[in-house]
Length: 154
Image (cartoon, rainbow, N blue to C red):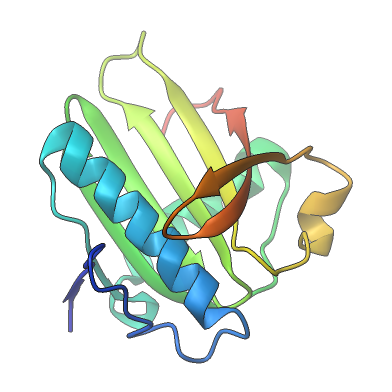
């Protein structure tokens, strides 16, 4: 069952099993607010079990581009298109959020972004390979983020 992410009344719905559920819900709400404000897009997520194609797509890019495997269990995922960009998100039990931004135009931007919920440790599989910058969010507290540019075609 899909869930429309509310960034006014933040809910942990679908994220309850995360040890940082409140912070992850804030991170998810922060993303929803961004897409609503910038693109007038309503962020809707579904359980990862119902969105296996999205999860597999993100995991394939991680594996092929950087030989990365995420150890945490995916909880929710979504994919949508806005302003010439194909976006995919996976939210993980650990508090990690991964997004793939893939421009439809071959000359456009294509990247994978990682965001860490407030209170979670950097996942071991990412710790030695990425540096994380900090940003403040009213909804999510302190978010740490990093990214890499996608080189291949997906």
